[in-house]
Length: 132
Image (cartoon, rainbow, N blue to C red; front, side, top):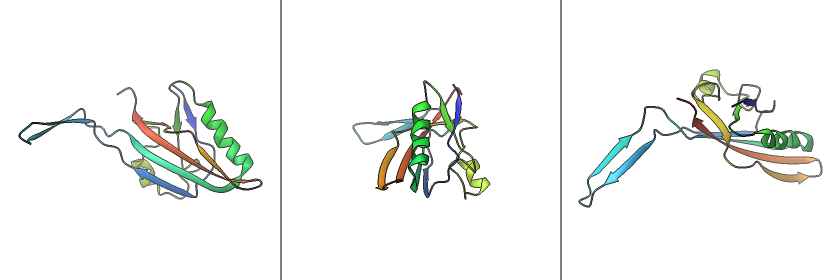
């Protein structure tokens, strides 16, 4: 398992959805429901980054980063790598891949050509709980 830093780019837009505690729901025929939670950690957080109107060279850097992820490698973020402009306290809430959650690409990056030499790239990541 190797940490791979996101390229040194600041996204135009960013969205984050906190994870949930793993649980199973059992519902009986009479309608009563029981929730069984497995552990006290939140998993499957989602982080979406969009890099609008960047150079094709920067778009290629993102695609190369995606292709470099092998096996159980994971992506880390920082204030200069995907989280620029975000308060440090809020960055800590995201668990930037250096704490319990390990972020991986949820899907391949989506590249849209805006005009010659300029592209928009969208990346989706999901945070898994590794080795706890």
